[in-house]
Length: 386
Image 1 (cartoon, helix red, strand yellow):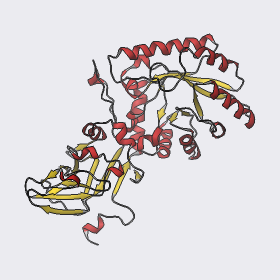
Image 2 (cartoon, rainbow, N blue to C red):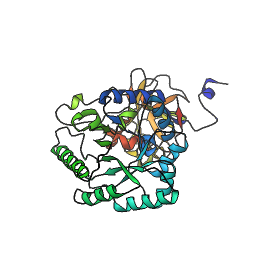
Image 3 (cartoon, rainbow, N blue to C red):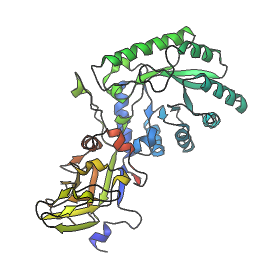
Image 4 (cartoon, helix red, strand yellow):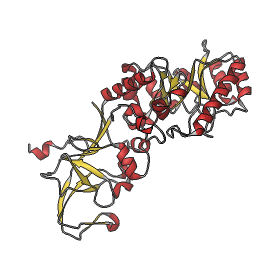
């Protein structure tokens, strides 16, 4: 078999992501050490663990010592539970009518915010003959105007929870609107409203075990609002948010990206100066140019907006994107990369000895956020766990 043939697998299109579960575990330990033993990290694995694979990530975090997980939906929580994970799992966006029975049957912890949530859970608990109380986390809206009970409606809901023979208020939480803005006055306002909510609950005889307000940026940079639970997400996968304001340069943790996205060169060609490349002919060669084609496009989650300014790594050299990214293919200029051959590995997200392209760089160049890059990685890109 030739060296070129050895670079290709007959089992898959050469476009894959490698996920280091050991790195995920180490990132968890970095976060846990940072917040200390008095704060419980609720490890957020929503949206398929930010594109990293929810089942594999949940198992790795459990093995690393995590004690609480957070998912998006009942469906995601059930998948994790059926994979054998025993940890408490918070369904952070609550549940839809009809999901209450499977939710309880799989021992998931729902977020609640309405009287209907309580009524549905009580009815399902009675039908299932549950003998234990159902732990729930009450979400309070302190300024996101998204989900959660308002401060005005809270006393009525608190009284209803206190009267329930099925519901145990295990936690209360809210969500910050701009935690990465370190001098934001609005964060302080939300913190005060959250403290008021806790006082209202105490007035109804409710003292939840967990109080949590801090998302990733606040987990890293705002210890004054940690309470006794925090919800790290992006940091677990190796990225710090770009904070603003005083002290922003210190708002980082020594975490390492967990995911590396790779592909291979599937075609090479030489083009003359003036040759247009790709859809809409927006790119033209200004010199004799060597182009490589890689089997990656916006159908894989590689943003089309990277057509101008995007770059990849080939043989420990940067190679710029040439022409518009299409659905399945992208052209790169490898004129300045020595010794390029068919089948050579290309890094879309990752690092070589001297070069690095992170999901944060892709986000910056694409005019979006790192969350969208990671979560947008298509299911047709296989995840390989290493």
